[in-house]
Image 1: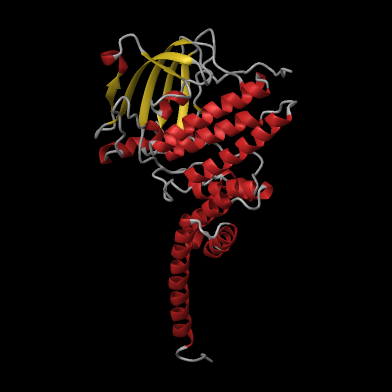
Image 2 (image 1 turned 90 degrees about the vertical axis):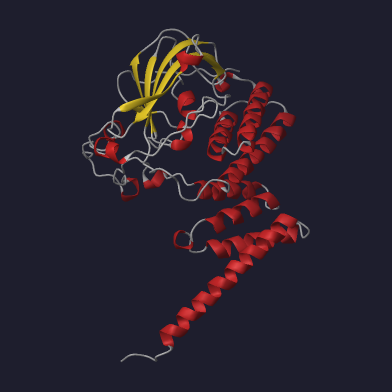
Length: 370
């Protein structure tokens, strides 16, 4: 049974809007010319021409790459399954052939393109007066100067002050052609499972290459495709769906414990929607343990994530990690990885106890003041 939905309105034309997966304003896309025809979706084969530039020491855009030099007929790839930069890929979603797109990327991971040999540099000092100003080419599309809301937001919805970028790269793209993509919402059970397994396999390929943040987003997208409402008629498909869901949760967690704790660019989200790889790992492991209380991988990865977060940001993290590792060892006493992580956790615990004991002795050493 196919579901009927309202037509996709598509991205706005002539206005900057957030094209990043996590809505962090790290990919601000402006479509200056709207094309006609099939919308680019995951699974579409696209042909594009792209110029990539970044600010030089005077703040002027300096071209780093022009696809016409090496690919006069355009770069051809499948959207959602390529090794081109994430900034280039995400700039194309829901655009039509003939579209002209300008995307400003302030995330070095998403801007890096190993295939085209394009790597972003930090903004030079001479470029900062222009590119780090709230009313500059980054601040304006990211909303640094926007008017305050008429109705004061709740405290948890308050946006943090705008932070100037450390990186800035501009992608100027002409979308030449688009083939029909896939719409998971219209897929039946078996087709949906096959599609999600393909997306999962691709995310695993990204993980193997060490692109953990990108792999994490692909696992999440696969999970979203799996969870689109549908009638599941066969019990075997329901079992496979549940197993696949668990696997995706655990893989997101695996990415989270591989991502760096300190991110190399400002996070512009509100605190309520703050994306933190290790906290994401904790959440996804907890989801698994609600349905599978004996899942050793979930306990192990949740413990690793808790140990990665600095103590001042995660007061009970060490205790929670030790508790999870103890349960994991009760379930699987011979697990080498869990035993190794428990040893590390106990070493941290001893150092913490020793430090706390020293502070306590120092506090009471001179007696009580009156």
